[in-house]
Image (cartoon, rainbow, N blue to C red):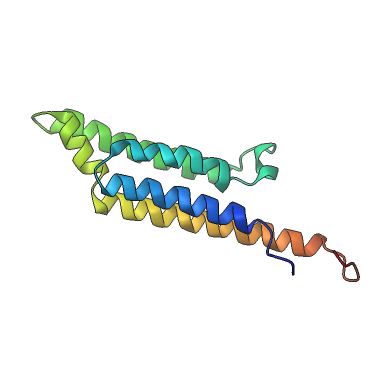
Length: 128
């Protein structure tokens, strides 16, 4: 019985992403570190060696700047202890759930792309 390519990779990445989101929802702002670990799983091995396409670069920069804008807005415009406010904003479900959906959608997209590439390279008459 042959399994789909990278099913363990996919499940590991989904588990790390979901764990990070669960920790953020529980109020542990260190759970965001799981997203850094998930990057290893989300980016396919073949993509580590190629240049980043312009569209993906703009998307990544846009997400980075919007995250920085949230942090700066909390620091500059919100009176009182900023760390508590920042923790409240970052751990809020309105922030965590869209991040989770975007990361899982990217994971599924990459897994399907790798699955299709593996099926194309497979020869029709070969047996494993």
